[in-house]
Image (cartoon, rainbow over all chains, first blue to last red):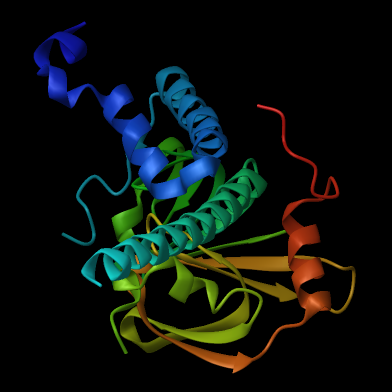
Length: 62
Length: 96
Length: 97
């Protein structure tokens, strides 16, 4: 997809994220990442299915 | 000597890093559990500009920038599906 | 006070299980027992327990809106247990993903 092809190798989100997570959460990184991934999947799935629009259209706080 | 003190520093550093990672994990896990507990609950959002809205919470992205909600009761009517920007929100509240 | 969002995880931990008063944007004040502080957004999760019915009200003040957090009361084991039970009704068992 355009996402993966457009990014330079050093910007691969998955890999960078793994290293970052390990630095932030140490031995608990896998557990936290698992919980986060589950939540992000739910968010992405809901957004795909429900096509929510931003409310309000213009941010209240810029 | 310099060698000993620097290796002790490194040890102290790694203990501190470990403690910080442990604290961060505990805090983050509890926050993720808060979001999980909020799923499908009626939530009140207090936003900037004194805007108050109710909605059913769906999910948040991992960076906590956007909330996906349903049945958003806005001052001018109900929006069936919506995204709220966390940047717009001061407080959100729900019952368990 | 150092800006709330700039604190380190170990400093946020000092507030967990304690009763606090949070002053937020436009002098809004909220109090409750601290369940956690999100280390990503600095949002603070406050719980107040209803005397009747055993329900709890959860209020989350977003990190960017927090101006000041003042400790009102120390927590104890009982508080910690009530807070845990509120969010982990399965007795603390790990959620399967």
